[in-house]
Each structure stands twice: as C-alpha cells, then as structure tokens.
Length: 230
Image 1 (tube, one colour):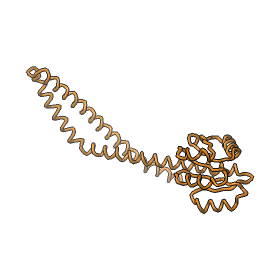
Image 2 (cartoon, one colour):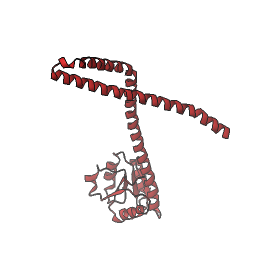
Image 3 (cartoon, helix red, strand yellow):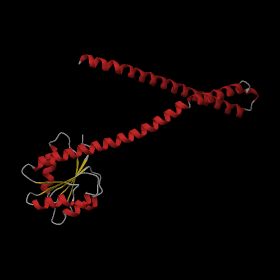
Image 4 (cartoon, helix red, strand yellow):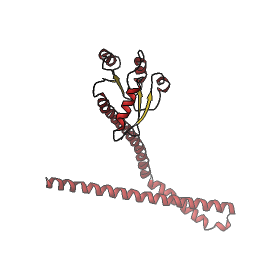
C-alpha cells in the first residue's frame, strides 16, 4: 500500500531513528525514509514526504521544527521522551494539529500503529483527489459526447452535402485544372473519412444504449432472484 510513500524522520538522537527504521523493516510494506538532524532539517523542510516523525531533539530546537512542519498538509507525529510529561501537554496545546505521544516500553509498536494509520489516510486522500479529477474529466467527456449526439444529424447532413457536391464535380474533373482537381479529390477523401468516423460514432452510441438497456433489464431479474432466495 504505502511502499511508494515517503516518511521524514527528524531527530538528534541517532538511536531513535535507527530503532524506528529497523522496526519498520519487519513490516510487510516499507516506505522510503529520509532521516535528518535538526541542523539539516531547515534546508529540506519543503521536501516531498507523506508523514513526518519528530523524535528527541536538542534543547530549544523542538518548537522551531514543529512550527515549520505544522504549516504543511502532511500528518506529523511528535515522540517525546518519557521524562518530559509537562512538555507533552505544552506541545499539544501549542500545536493542536500534531499527534503527540511519549516514549514508553512499547513506544516503537505504538508509533508504528499510528504511523501506518496516518499513511493509510494519506493514501485514501490521494485516491479521493484522483477520483475527483477523473470525475471532472469524465464530466467534460460526457458533455462533449452529448453535444456530438445532439448535433449528429445536422453534421451528417452537412457531410452528405459536401460528399455529394464533390462527387458531382469530380464527374467533370477532366475540365478542371490539375491543381483544382487534386484539391477537390482531397476534399472528397476527407469528407468520406469524416463520414466513416460519424458512422462509427453512431454505431457506438447504439451499442452503448443497448448495453445500458440490457443492464437495466437484468437488474430487476437479479433483485427478484435475491428476494426469492431470501
């Protein structure tokens, strides 16, 4: 699921980052990791990642890091050392968007559970955005299709007129200059190709209508069978 996603880990404690990455490696799917200290983080704050996890950092650096992270749209997990109970409440109050937890005996498992759920939500949000874009594109295509259907008859009549007149002129093409005859043949061939395209369009429209009708006819039958089975 999230093997193509990216996790940013910010910590000045190398053991924290190492233990977290090692714990994640035993999972079935593993995201990509970027591990930074607070000294390197400001220059990479605008990187492309789906989840940020903040571990133990040097004194005075936690607040600046969190202020940068909370301006983004990605979820942020802040893992504080167990000895800093008062700090946890302060962070929750000052940064309500962040997910704050403290280290304990099984903190790695707790962080993993929370991180996996965060990545699931990120993936779901991405799917929803793709579905919305696909829906907009589908609406545009449907509008274009409706326009073509509504004007199909008039367009076919215009093509018939072009084909008929070009064929009539071609019967006397021997009296036309060579350049005019070539241009006339091009007009006739193009109109003929457009006519074939419109015929295929009409066939597709009929096939889709028949398939839709068949689906509508089968739905009551399936409902009846389900009711009878119950």
